Image 1 (tube, rainbow over the protein chains, first blue to last red):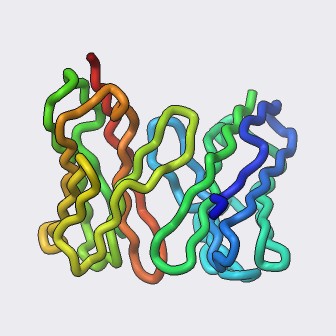
Image 2: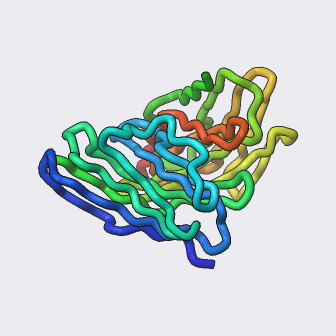
Length: 111
Length: 111
């Protein structure tokens, strides 16, 4: 079974630029998550989708972050404009029930 | 609000030692607890998942225990090897379906 796929793996941008990350979950997984992991910290949930709908986006900075999951499969996370403090690893995960499976992450550096 | 704490933050041991990583959480109303491994620049690999009704899980040289009433879990690694060097993250699954992570224990096993 193929795992969770993410791209790109690395991205370097200047502050105030925009960036987008892509995630393809495990086939058949209805729930998809985006996490932000700042260096030295544990991952923090940004947004959770159940099929097409948003279940929890309480920790998503909505003035600059947006996410969508069209057709209930792939998802994109966008940051516009980026700030220095957005430098982190962005992890995507998917699940069917109560166990989440994580992708390799995208390491974002904002200079 | 659920808080997850991991002690110690870092650990350096010689090869062959048995070691214990600790995780504590503040709210015992959890669905399960998971231990993950994270290698530098990589995503999360699930090591062990303990359901709330279980007391422990074992996989090879790893054994994880869960005491829900006291809000504690331990990860025991037997006969440590240099290949065990990584960051170990503990996470609890809060109702309805939110994974809360600790800040991790960075382990180095030297030959």
